[in-house]
Length: 279
Image (cartoon, rainbow, N blue to C red; front, side):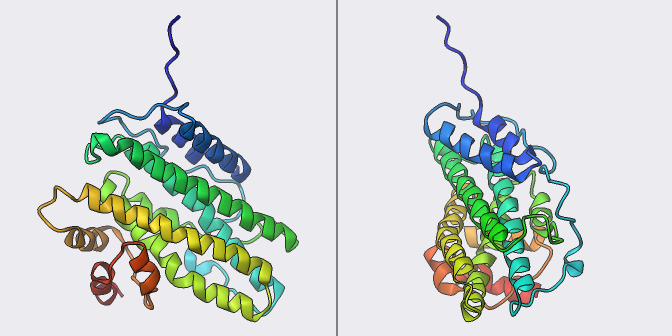
């Protein structure tokens, strides 16, 4: 009997990115992770073409506005705390897309050594699965607070910051995990402190889970960035400087959480010089 070919993991990851409804996106993310871990999906061959959609699926709400038009959050009242957690939910939803897009777009990239391709897929599927779980935790908290995801305007800056790296794996790794997610390591402890000061223990517990796991996500980015830059004439450090200066339109803002960044394998020589140049 002829054995049926397994579905390609790149195509399944693309379905996660394309799903417009958050609940469907989360369900598909968990299903793809389960199927990959169980050996029910086919790893891509070297040179396999990207199959990611040009843009992720999005629900009708929240309304997306330019970052300057999203209201500021004051945590001294319930509305402000809800808005903060809503912003976190929006970040986590974007993060699901960014990590499954990493698989759908780049898993066949020739710069990944053939004997490391399966590990690349496993890392980013695992990270995307984490982000789906994070979104669920935050959305549940929003519902406990009397609302839901979509109730507050949001911006699309996270996806837009990464979208211009669609054709360059090294650039995507530099921008998505090593700039955008690393920024989360800087700001999340401050959010935790502010929420603790107003007695929001439930939200604090969720942010602590996210923070602890984001260190590992940045570490995956640092590890794979070093891998894809191994054949460059420049060092990984200088490649990072060049790529961030080219593809990231914004500031690398201080203060940096140096202990967490170092634990993730992101040394100060990568980001410190760029903070002064770009800010």
